[in-house]
Each structure stands twice: as C-alpha cells, then as structure tokens.
Image 1 (cartoon, helix red, strand yellow):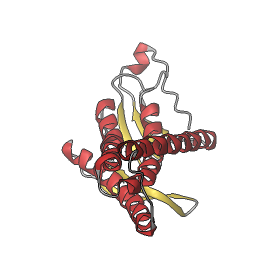
Image 2 (cartoon, one colour; image 1 turned 120 degrees about the vertical axis):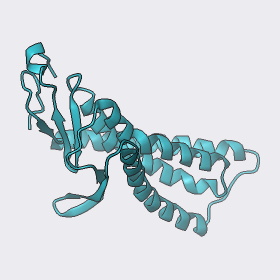
Image 3 (cartoon, one colour; image 1 turned 180 degrees about the vertical axis):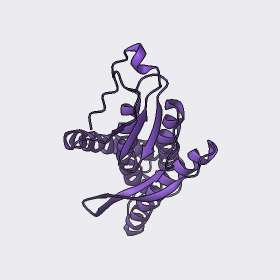
Length: 196
C-alpha cells in the first residue's frame, strides 16, 4: 500500500513493509541498549558506595515484571483511549499465525494526530518514568533494569506509528488498526495539492 496521500481524499491503509520492519527492529534493539544503560545508571548511581547484588529472586522478578509490563503497556493505551471517550479492544498481534505481541485498538475510531500521539505515547512516558524511578529509588531496583530496557525497545512500534502519522496532511484523522494505520486525509487535501 503506497501511503501517498497527495491529490486524494480517500482513506489510505498503511502497514510497515518488510524493509521498514527491519529498520524498526534495529531501532528497537538500539532502544533496548539505550534503555539498559539508562536504567542501569539509575540503579547504580545511588548504590555506588554500597554496591549491589543480583540473585535468583531478582531473575524471577525480572521475568515476571517484563510480562507484567507488556500487559500494563496495553492497559495504558486502553486507559488513554477511555480518557478520550473511546472503547478499547485488546488483542494479539500475529505474524504468520505466530503471536508476537499484544495490541490495543479502538476499531473504527478516527483520532486527530494529537489524540493519536497521546494514546500511542502514553505507555512510553508513564512506564519508562515508572521503571526508571523504581530502578533508582525502589526496593530491588536492579530488577527494573532489564524489564525497563525491554519495554523501551518494545515501544518502537508505537514510535514508528507516530512517525508515520506525523507525515500525514494537516487535519487528517488517524485510525489505529491491528496491522497499521488507516489515514483519513481532510476533504480539501486534493485542492491544496498537499504532498506526503
């Protein structure tokens, strides 16, 4: 699907191509590394004089927290949709019948770019702040390092959708779908000769 909205007032479906997915995944890995450095720094700096330890209990907590963060991430999307008066729907993301993640959408809901950004970025802002705070100040703060880093890397899909939505004509409405976006350009886009 082209995604070129110039001269058209019809809705356009957009989903990342295989090449775009490759770049998205590379950025996701970079975000995990960045997230690890940031979370580790938040954990290590307050403990520099006393050191720290990481045992079996911490490993179990890390695994559990990583899975909990995945669910809470989608719940935050849902809460953001609810604050805008929309009813969220939760589901599973699949690639070739293999579950690769969780999703939250509001089928048929068209949002302004600002509302879409709010919904898409809410988990990144809230949960990254929470895991950084936990790493720095909370009990077993070391257990927040890996889940926080993985969560940040997992936000790359939301960032990719926000990046694509930011290139739509002004006044477009964005519909978040399980497989990508449906972009509804304003009726007068063709008359203005807007280029994507």
